[in-house]
Image (cartoon, rainbow, N blue to C red):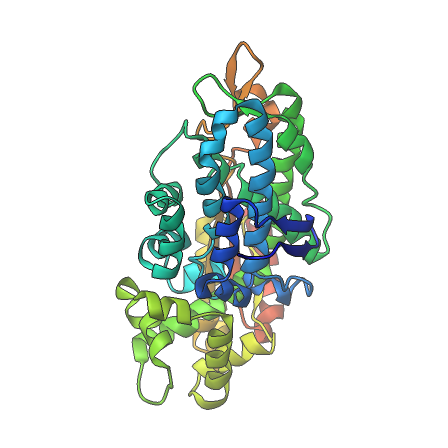
Length: 421
């Protein structure tokens, strides 16, 4: 029998896991698996520590925080409807394991290696024996129940789907608080207790919010919007992702024996669709950085140059070009690539346009407002939330620092010409 465990968390303070409760013993056992311990070696915010030096926390820390949020919500909902107790193993297991499928540098690797962490989380729950056997010990159907919550399958009225995978779920309630704290910003100060106290059940059995909680939800969604604009989609993050993408694109197109790659990372690069569980779990931030350091010192250009830029934070530059027309963007890109080539940089690797879309709030009808008589969609109940459903696009021109003055002058000229037109 496990003893009581306490995690001293900067956000939720003491997170106590009680060994007298079977569902929490299950959590202790899952935490001890190699797959979950691996999350200590996966940065929560990917490359954001190159912008916000305190952003060094891990997916391990975040996942335990999500479990903590889920347990608080569970206690609230059981007070309203004791029958909700039947969901405790599924809710707690899904909350803890929702990110177990992340690759190196979290979301960054999803773009670099083109995989979805939700799919891998589901696969590990079903096919990784240490986790699967723990879950089946408490309920043989538990892996299937949890896996369904990670899939894109539409379970609109399913209360657990709302709590695990929706626009306002336990994951987001933790990471906005945690990421704000770790980056030293003040944007993500979510009123967690207010949101939890306003939760209730709708007549169809789904999760709903009482009218008193709408302002707290508005606040939450505004903070989410600001955090994406200032942290998650920060231009330095976009530049770093661009560099990593081009490193691996170059390796895929021109791989030869001059570039050393171990068998694990080779599988990630060249056979991502047939990646097995062993090689998936063997890759983490440590392995990725080891390769980048080795390539910096031992690989031919331009791979060594790109790796040096990333490792030593001697990065490319980026200019926001949202305001330009598509024709002007193409003219600017052609100009930038010409200038880049003049300095003996490969213009396809060191210069380009990176488009990024920030998706607005999508309610998917997963969380509605219930006043005891009528059930309303969030975006119809709040004009502010309706505004936050709008998508935003961002265009960055990425280029070497040696042509920064030329690019600035060219952008000014394009602006002036567009005014004359």
